[in-house]
Image (cartoon, one colour):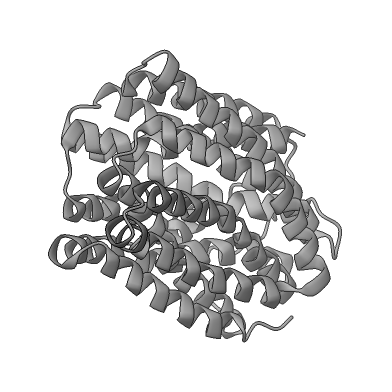
Length: 380
């Protein structure tokens, strides 16, 4: 219960950040697509170093790592609030926030898996997703009330997110020493896990294209304000209430391969929707409302499908030679997916500015097609 409560608080904080960050950048600094893409390099650098960070703290149990991650997130959010109109301090604060946000990724799945009976890992991760989604809806409500009803400024909203993560630190420290291994190795790299590494690499490409440029389509092409993102994220979270537990059940019953291939197929559809809805419905047929609706559906689908990440975690847990391998291997997976996700946004931004945003999502569709082939090779 302490673990779920801590994750819930961090999910509220993350939801607040995700809903306002792109609008904050656009309204405060009026960024071009190229500059927005280049900002992803420092923001995602900690992801590349996740395996290193986890290795440096090899002597700390996972609950301790959770407290460190939550505290770092709180510091970063507070820094953005304080220096909201100063570019380089904001970038530095975003980097600090990102360190905590990436450190928590392998920790939460590792602890959740350790709290599950054998053969029920997918169900436990589905329950964790359910708790996280309920909390996320609360975060979106904070953004909607703050930006739409109270007309709060961005620093106030970021301070609320910082406070929420700070409360999570207390819960992490109050937990029993569970979900960890005294002899956890600093770093694990094994040929046995090579397909897991490949899945993480393709996820990095898919993730960063949509995190960076999916919302940017709604902000720049369709001129949507921050509270619209809160509404869309709430819709996705409500769907996730049913989807994530069901997804955990699907993983336990049919295996990871079916789920991962299905996600890759749907990402081809989402890529086409993002890239060509405006051209097809708005420009050619004169239906801008339909074009906006189609892109909003793509945004929600993209958000919901991020839950499929639990299939990669359960695949690794079944593949692992010993339980001590799981946390460092998940950490390495986060680092691997950032090898490509750090470089793609800058390239995508230049493509957007030079040739049009549609070609960014043509590239995303190609990545999704390649991911279908990789996912089809999964065996447990």
